[in-house]
Length: 70
Image (cartoon, rainbow, N blue to C red; front, top):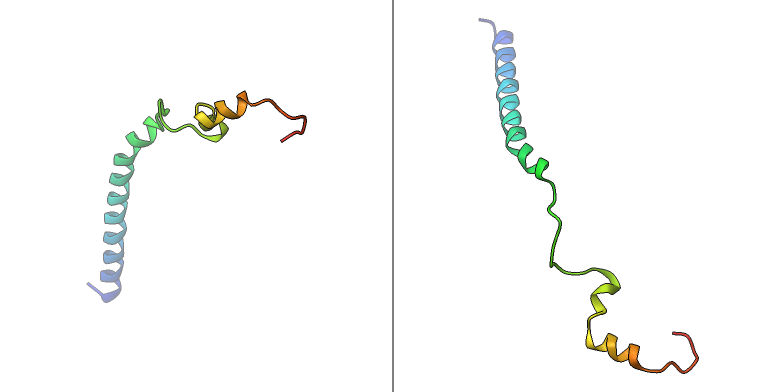
């Protein structure tokens, strides 16, 4: 077999092995992608809603406003 034939065979073998490994990785990753993100229940609250239950929120809401806007 010529030197050129060995290089082609080696390149083809590398391509096939890489393809098999890539396909196996895709098969393993597919169930994870199908599940998606689970909705968070009871987790941390974002934005101003996080402060609405705080004592300082109730204190501030109970104070009379003096006419100026905050």
